Length: 223
Image (cartoon, rainbow, N blue to C red; front, side, top):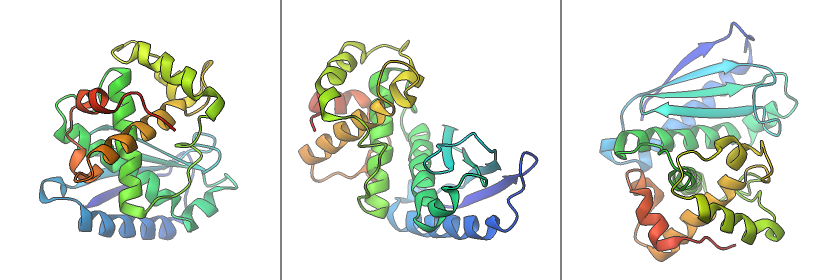
């Protein structure tokens, strides 16, 4: 897969960081070429922007993807955790997560999806894809939901799985009464459960899977 970089630096120059970012991009592209099928090897534009204060504070990074051909990677070069994220491979993992979203937009009729169930599956697939490409890595995001809150959060999600009016920011970013990153934790466990039940499939081959298949077979997710 060719990751075509476009640097936007009006909000903040990246200077000497660009070489380290380029190295992570090149490494990621090489790994993806080795594991993705031929029908998933299209070029993807990746906007890299430096916007202080606009990232996940723990990483100094964040990513987004809203269509099959475009990913945005936002970095905060002033964040004290940003240099560590470059040396520990966090940038590559976030980029890989967004690549799976791009593949899902291309291969799944509903793309990322519109309902809570579709969002849970899309995010869970992307995080399991990161594990497939880079190996399992402890993540505060996919392990964000404390056991004491697990059952009640699963029960609440179960009531709203088919809703296309769910509050995405509340479920995934903690902007409400739910624990931060709750949706990522649920989605990750849900897809992990599906993979255990279907040992012959991998996240690489599930970019186009209908979310309802995962939900019907593997809901509710367990710790």
